[in-house]
Length: 485
Length: 54
Image (tube, rainbow over all chains, first blue to last red; front, side, top):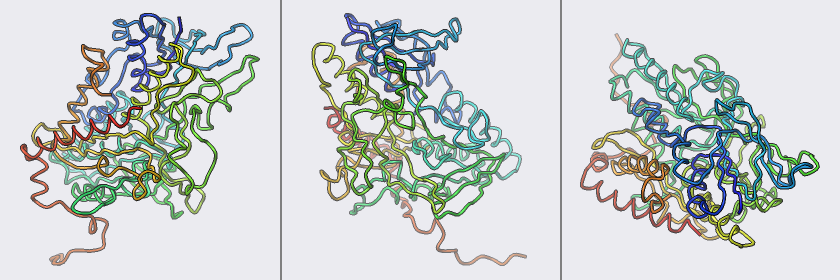
């Protein structure tokens, strides 16, 4: 019997867990370790952040779901990995610390035959002084709790506007090295929509601020799509939507510091600026969760297993090269750690070989460019591929049998721009592949038949259906395995 | 008393991007057209997903 330990129960971790349980759960042991008691459909946190959904609408208890399966759930935080075991324990193990109230602070070594690191990101608010809801002045929609607080502050501002006060809303990225611009992009349109619904839009100045070189970059270096007889860059459409909704934008910006009501930022030209705000939601940069690694002798091998940003090294080509020599082939295919073949990392937890967007530096040497997105659909795709490979390796395969390179997979992003069954709209974007491949698609790096963008009610329906479908699927309700990931 | 503004300031951020025409705005929430687009988008996503699994 093999034991497979999965660290993390987000989109990637839970996807791997439900498939491994389905394929191996009766004969082998699946253990899921997550510090969170609840699963969260993160894309819908946007709707929590504007008061259109409750926390219960976007979360459910993991323990209740895993009770229906053969998965052994431990509500705990992973601290370290011993991929060779230790002087006392001969098999590989992870050390975890329980977050469950009854066992809080208690540590345990969990031995494994296969390990999937799907720990997601550390929300690194500390990278920017004054950023974030806990120790700063901005709000976030990264967790349900953050989104609830964001909505409370949004409603307070709406009351001020009703009383006749003009307010400034600033939404975007809170550091020069952020990813996940799509979440902020979606939130700004939902805030705009709510302000219109409340009849106070004319009292608000709404400003987008981001580290993108141009609007519509989304950490993917932008996209080209066919529209109106032309192949046009997504920047055109992103700007068009901003103008249509009366939103101003600041790009190429690294937020250096936030004070009460004031954002200090630097732009690529090396200039320093300030932006006042009454309400601001800024996405934090991501980092690895800080897992340590030790060899059998107890030597710290964290630098061998993890990249400096804390994400786990996998089968990517990490050789430093200039931008012009980057290739689709640099990106990992099977997410296996090169040193320890029974260890995998998926979702945000794996270390990308380099960004997708071109690295840029300000005149002062400050890096200002988006880091690669690897949330949502790509997370689930790579998690399923790793689950398939582990299933086959448990059954005798010597090497991973399935691949899911971000340079060979597509992604769909449906960004709500207003929720209503007949009057709502959403921007629907598909890209194939996520990482441009200029050797296969020399002109634009992507398949233009599958790289599309449009705004309309159909997108809103899609978003609504996806919300319910993915939560249904994650709750392992009947027929879940035939639904697309 | 302020002078009446009779011209519009060009060369601003909002001056350059394309703006949707009335027809484009109408089509975004036209039920019939959007039902058709819903089917098209779903088919594209299914094709995209089928090409993403190896």
